[in-house]
Amino acid sequence: MRIRWISILVLLLTALAAAQVQFPSGKKDKEDPTIRTIQGLVKDTEDVLVAGAVVQLKNMKSLQIRSFITKADGKFVYNNMARDIDFELRAEAKGMASSTKTVSTFDNRKIAIVNLKLDTKVEKK
View 1 (cartoon, helix red, strand yellow):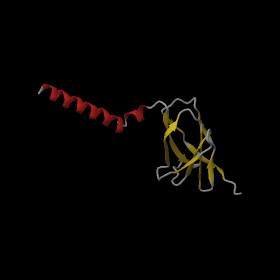
View 2 (tube, helix red, strand yellow; view 1 turned 60 degrees about the vertical axis):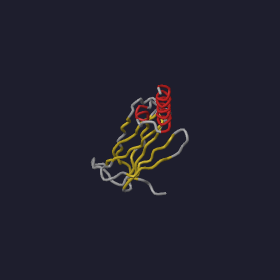
View 3 (tube, helix red, strand yellow; view 1 turned 120 degrees about the horizontal axis):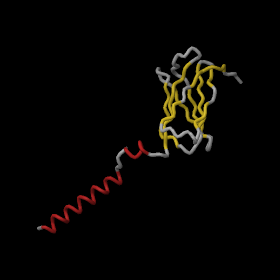
View 4 (cartoon, helix red, strand yellow; view 1 turned 120 degrees about the vertical axis):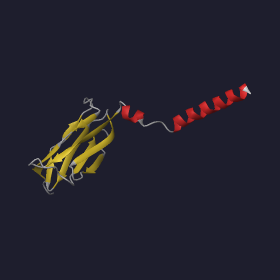
């Protein structure tokens, strides 16, 4: 009888360990030192939040560009960004553009806040 209970206990512990491997808690992602969040606000020349601005984030290693369209609060968020890559950010809206800002690999913030201001007219090509 005792061997039966020990066998059941071992079986349960093995099943729990397997479940943890298949379905890890989200805690690891939040504490992962290799990733970060890049976020900020887009404002116009009068410091008014800009809805519908297109924020482009450029990976300086692969040259891939990701775009985010701001909501009414003017906010943009890029999650799970590698810390070992430099990124450039730029916003455009209403015929205006922001200057380009860089988030460097030397920036060790877990959440990098980069606010962008539309201050230059976009030239049509």
